[in-house]
Picture 1: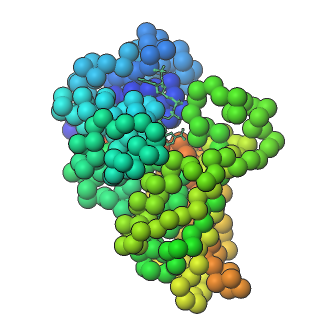
Picture 2: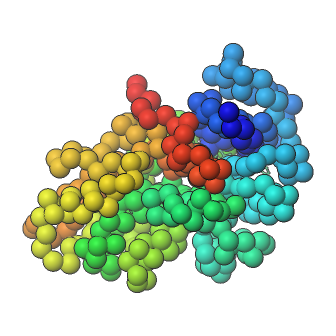
Picture 3: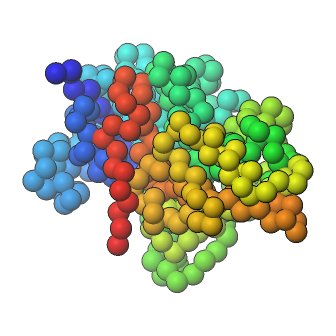
Length: 350
Ligand SMILES: NC(=O)c1ccc[n+]([C@@H]2O[C@H](COP(=O)([O-])OP(=O)(O)OC[C@H]3O[C@@H](n4cnc5c(N)ncnc54)[C@H](OP(=O)(O)O)[C@@H]3O)[C@@H](O)[C@H]2O)c1
């Protein structure tokens, strides 16, 4: 039997940390041996997550986030805020540990662009060239050989996967793309904020962050590479009164007249060898509940002949495909395992 891969998790008390703990229960080739939190150190995982009671992982004692203490791991997930991740990543890499960073610290290739959008200095910019953007549908080979993964943002995952086939095929105008995206409240993290209280979110629907959401440069960077030309997008974000899930409705203009059947064929072909993206049959549109708790991205296609628009709908779970599930896909790949090992394929239904 091959050796079990030892994994560490910095930030086990956040929403993405909690999701990773849930996913690790199912993994037979990787074991969580370290989990950190400054506020809950000393407790067992089962004490903070009763869903781990009577499972072996529940007995793991949470420790303070100390990179030296994580050096025994083969791979470490950084489920911490941006700015915090860059220093920890650098120390772990020096200790010979592979890193999957869920924050934005290594996603933007250009230091100045990162600093302009995130309003912090990038103190480990020498690692930007080495970090691989962890979207397996686009960068599978590079990911397999990487030691530092910049795990994509949640909104960017849904938008880039939704646009990739159309841009790669030169199907749509690059100057007229509108990404109208909606996320559940867990997208903002677990820290207490008035805007995320139940009474502020439930039974309501609002836009936020327009027109300067921090995921904009990440989306533009990746879709520009796909199209081979610089793209500026309108990216508009909304808060849904649900706990998890993202639905992006992406408005594009077709370069020439095309039927929805032709577009569907292009999308189906593009994702034919990428099983975790499901191009839905024509007439079906994606719903967040069908991807809840999974790494699937469901894509629906509509062509409006009156406006010559291709409208792409892309649904993911922000915590699973948009964060921890994708992080586990990347960890699997950099550790020589199958892309989907340990990942649940059926959604969490009500
Ligand atoms: N939520 C999403 O849907 C989502 C999706 C994609 C990517 N992300 C990214 O993933 C990261 C984690 O997101 P989240 O939503 O899980 O955040 P969160 O709920 O706010 O949790 C943050 C975690 O980081 C720990 N932490 C905070 N400051 C730290 C520090 N200075 N040193 C060590 N640990 C620290 C916290 O634990 P202690 O305070 O106890 O140490 C907590 O466990 C963020 O960078 C976020 O942008 C989130």
